Length: 78
Image 1 (cartoon, rainbow, N blue to C red):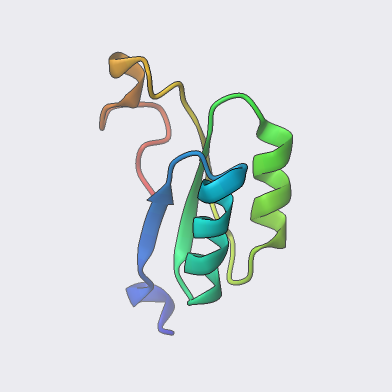
Image 2 (cartoon, rainbow, N blue to C red):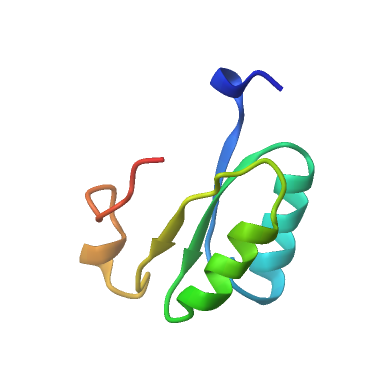
């Protein structure tokens, strides 16, 4: 896939469970995956390292805090 046209997705809760499975599925299909986590940076980093087609950026945020989850949140741009 042309790197300039690569599709990108942000998967919330990607460090474990269903979010992790979604991140793996998207990356397996050639997507660039933004990996969101709240409190487990080690699991998020391990996932990013295991996915094909990186680099896959990491985003730490408490999405329960509206001020921290909006488009102006630190690291919100992929």
